[in-house]
Length: 93
Image: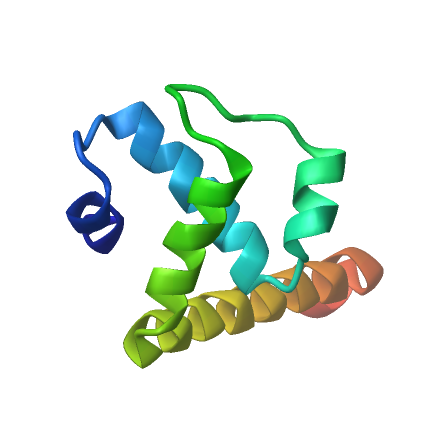
């Protein structure tokens, strides 16, 4: 979120969260058209184009993409672990 704050002035926390939400969805593989057609969470004068520009700037930094990749991998492992617990509850004992 610090990198987003460096690109967006003023760095108003709710506005930064809007950009972060958009960027998370984009890094997760959703297209910009899919987000703009299926969601509406913009505010503070933020438009879809400016959110996409923020994503483009962040995606230029390989370390940001790597962090999101690690985050999504951890999420997938957690979901799989929970699925295993649900489908085999006695195995966890």
